[in-house]
Image (cartoon, rainbow, N blue to C red):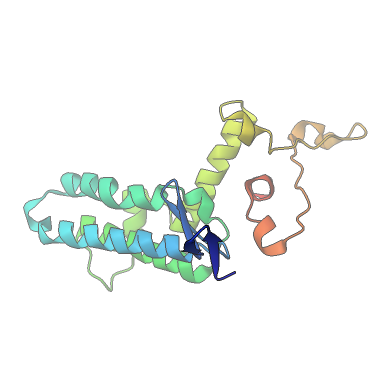
Length: 189
């Protein structure tokens, strides 16, 4: 559908929509969201980098958390299941921010720097946020609409696994999109 006609006005159909600060495209690939995060984060890294010599490490870390990592973490549960290519782009942003804080050279290994800063890599940050939301929903600390998505596995007979607090993973009709849903991804993790 190339456009919608409302009276005399023709409204073109967009392939990207923004809702609560997150860009969704028609394929739910999150490509536009990742591009937006990277563009804004690199801008702030560049600006902070210009004054880095005037700042101590603690102040730089606060600024990076305020302007960069907060953007990486905003709505990152929605980024679960994105392609490795997009994860790599986000990881490069985090690596650049870590290098700016610690004044590490571009070609030095980043793993030790991330450990020193106590930062999880991007993929693990996304999974951590998803599991945190799952923990809250299991303990009644999340909204009811999120808690209703989780189904506890009911055993039909007495087994040793009765105390394991297992969760039911619903079957997905859409392999690519259905497995990214909270109701499917969180119990699997």
